[in-house]
Image (cartoon, rainbow, N blue to C red; front, side, top):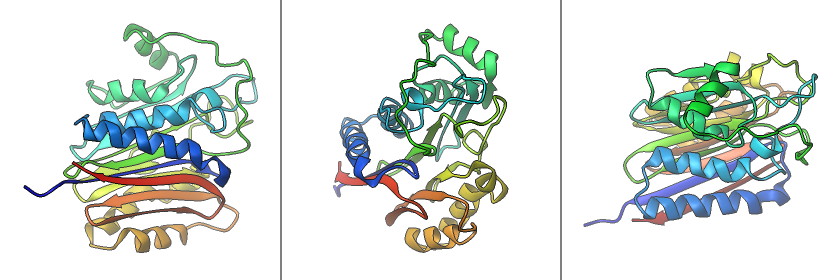
Length: 261
């Protein structure tokens, strides 16, 4: 029986310091170990993002930047090639929003927001924590994310504290399907950068559509980056059965790791 190829990519956000790729390296290593232990691909992608949420150098989870009112309001989303999608937006007081999004993916809902998302998380047993203690050491960085291939199925996951200094109700691309991420039978895509521009370009879905057409990940990446003005920060991770690519028009801590099962 032939071996299955395993691929994990993780990034710390457009604008993150390349020197912080040790954090994305650790996330990818965990992802590979999980896949080799036959963890479902969507769960593995979310666990990879959990590592990034717990790293205060990145703008997600523990490292989330504050809004203009001093609060931390986070967005997260996940999707797999079975079209399971779940997201939360403007979530407060939860250390790892990606796991709440993962639960939403298995519910009758697709997106929960604000106080209702928090109530849902508390009903699931998540602990309410103080997220306004100034734990972030992240510079002005963007969404963290991961794409994963287990040899058969794909998944993508994202998490962010949002644009630092933005108004409390602002929501970017992360929880909007086809904008920040997309996964299907032909591959998976996740994005990071200027959320409004990513949303208006339907960036993840249009990039995924190139994979459907047989365009290789590196070419798809180059084309997608060309959709944005130089002033708009953007980064992507892309994987399909035949390869993978990642990059940004800014600095970006990111890593890739392959293995076999």
